[in-house]
Image 1 (cartoon, rainbow, N blue to C red):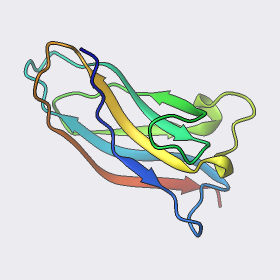
Image 2 (tube, rainbow, N blue to C red):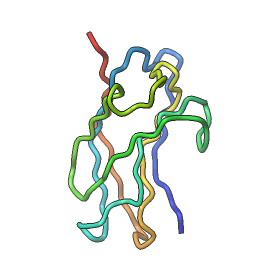
Image 3 (cartoon, helix red, strand yellow):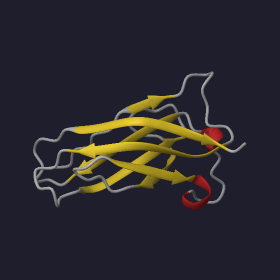
Length: 116
């Protein structure tokens, strides 16, 4: 089976990523096997106001059973032409392996970085 878990952060009109150079967050997942990870895990920067779909840019990361800080630098990881100002939604989540029937997933300390 194919199951995704991801909270959606919809940016309000007064919130935006204009001028952002990257973001970071802390993540932990309660995998049944400590050696296990997700099939895929993404920070999805969505350029349309669509909860489940929508054009965007995905940034991969690897969740584990321990708290870790994920850092994404747009200049290094984003495709050419990506403009953070166009982001309307952030989805941060994963697609666990099919053997993972129950999963607890934590996110904390989401930060956006801007150049001075």
